[in-house]
Image 1 (tube, rainbow, N blue to C red):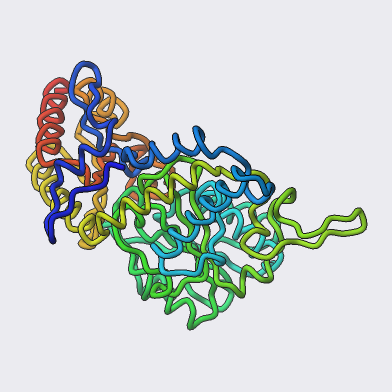
Image 2 (image 1 turned 60 degrees about the vertical axis):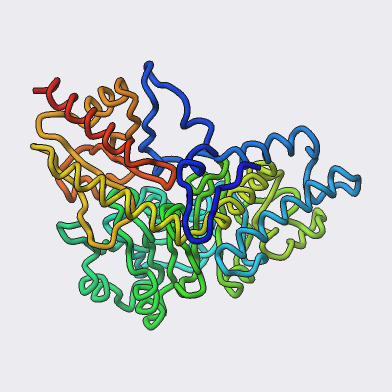
Amino acid sequence: MNAPLVVATSIDWAAVRADFPLLTRLVHGKPLVYLDSANTGQKPASVIETVDDFYRRHNANVSRAVHALGSEATESYEAARGKLARHLNVRSDDLVLCSGTTFAINLVAYSWALPRLQPGDAILLTRMEHHANIVPWQLIAERTGAKIKVAEITPDGTLDLDALYAAMTSDVKVFGVAHVSNVLGTINPVREICREARRRGIVTVVDGSQALPHMAVDIPSIGCDFYAFTGHKMCGPTGTGALWARKEHLAVMPPFLGGGEMIKEVRFDGTVFNDPPHRFEAGTPNIAGHIGLGAAVDYLDALGMANVAAREAELLAHLLEEMRQIDGLRIIGTAKDKAAVVSFLVEGAHAHDLATLLDLEGVAVRSGHHCAHPLMQFFGVAATCRASLAFYNTHAEIEAFVAALLKVRRLLG
């Protein structure tokens, strides 16, 4: 295992970067500058090796066989659940393993909300939500007669908390909020927000996809009802993630999908369902992926999320300082409390053209609406470029990105 090098309270970030094989490659003959970690995080060798080892030495289905391979697979899979639970300071039997945030929020929408909402009820969402925390609620609203209410933001990309709390009226039954905006980088005060919602009897669903890669997350201290996240953004494999839910919710939620593993007994005249969380884990899961996610949690825990947050804050400060010196560049989202995500536009350049030309310089940024159409509409733009940092980036890469941006700026006139 290529573990990060930790010396007392200091970290050799060059040694950490060396743990990520993909970061050594060339793109168009130039060193890769990967600034798209908000889209997906790169994987350390320990995660890659863990997945490889599972398929080479332990591959079997979970919870279905008593032979050695089946026992090994099940033990490793459930161990990964335990690692995630400890990382989030929750009980492992309150953690449903799934393909990621999109599945997790759909599970809440269809299993918790659909049986409960009715005409006249409201679902409150914020302007900055990812489509994964909008579209499922629209589908539920159509089926139940509930309505969608929107909590607006301020021009700097922060939630208008006074307006948000005013919108928490008696008709609101559920509230969805991003812990960290995938476009703006805004870190929302979810602990305070969930406290206010709880006082009003509103169930809270927090999208933690962009929070877990950047900071320590202690779910009990947040006080939410549901917390969803994706593994591939936190150095784990794609197709992994989980939903945490309060035990009292899981106990009364019907299954979302039916099939193997989520049952205790099946007869043609009825089925006895399994206990949570297995009730919500029908079929063969992404076994290797979740075991790999467990290895990613090991990696991040060894590094220390406080160290990750400090490193990324340092890189973000450098990036913002450099970008603000570029004429005609507009940063979208300038909240004071911000993760290492920067959306931007350059005067006279379409975001896709800008990203394409940056790619020719070896720089990978994302362009588009970032699955946040309502947020783009608020700022009056069709798309932005987004540079997103991780702890494995370097100050030299920031300078290379800015140099490439200046070169592209000149080419575009």
